[in-house]
Amino acid sequence: MPCKIIIVSGLPGSGKSYFAEKLAAALDFIYINSDQVRHQLQAISRYTFEDKLLVYKEMLQKTKHAIEENRNVIVDATFYHHTMREMFVRLAYANRASIWVIEVIADENIIRERLQKPRMYSEADYSVYEKIRDDFEEITMPHITLQSTNNNLEAMIETAKNYISSERN
Image (cartoon, rainbow, N blue to C red; front, side, top):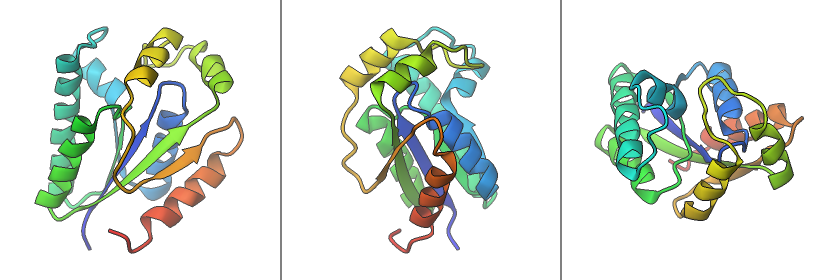
């Protein structure tokens, strides 16, 4: 059975990281998070496109290593630009892995509230959310979109499990 790469995409404050980490635990998948990788690379507060690509390339290497060990992976990042998504699609095809994309969205008032609370690795505040929102390129590849509220995590996980167990890929 081919390995699975699950891309969890979304804006800061959407709940994507909380969801992705819980989904990874529920499925026993390796969890790779862009904020943690940025922290490991000591690239804190460096957000040029080139700096972001370095983080994505490191996540790509971690993903490649995991699938070489026959492990399934959840990769959690904004994936706001098609270039970042395509890197992982190419990796999946080159390694005969299946790739699944989940976009997490939330109402703006929930996002604003979430971004006011401190988070361990993320530096994103509301101004970062607005910038990424304005730059976010629509996901054109097959994917599902999950609406995050403050009390629907279990439903999101069940929907995601059903999606990735389908025979599409």
